[in-house]
Length: 268
Image (cartoon, rainbow, N blue to C red; front, side, top):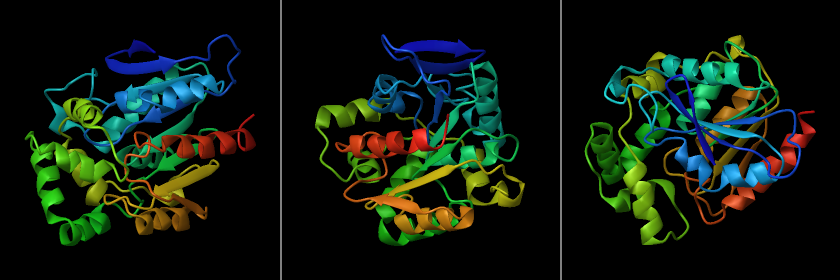
């Protein structure tokens, strides 16, 4: 793994070893409370080994990117501009792969530009966060409280991270390693995703789109993933036995295999 600076943005990169790369690279976009690191645990090595040049950006205020101290000033549009900045520096237009908030950013990016293909993983639906937030308040109020504490710079219990991201068992040392890398999120971005800056499907480019969810996702449950799929006229695939953090679950490979089988049917 190589860490690059694209201006003031941290971008992790992996290339195929000892083989030519496909012409189309992959750009991974993380969700709220995290950074590019979440993709490098499993997905980036996997897809680099499959022949793809892989990049993952830490959005402004996240990871090693710019303006950590000004996190709350960042909007979803700022994050879209981050993606555009990285895309402009890549050797070819990439497939965009966005998780959770990253999926919302992919949708907003498609209002301004096309890409060869897009993958939405447990993505915030175009209808926004309100539906999932209300459901979570009724079903798991303690988790809502801890997420709000983290949003405000607090430190929730590690078990809340386990509940939010994982359905399958995870070793305590791995959980704590992820916990130490998590961070607060921009209030402004959360409000944008809830109400103030939702995607406008009629304005979007419509590349081939793969829409994926997880059976035991408490944050973006399967019904929300199905809403996204219905909006874009594309079937949703829901992975059994997985939680929201599909790229970090024990069975992450089932998700990666599904994406890897789909990509060659959509891009040259």
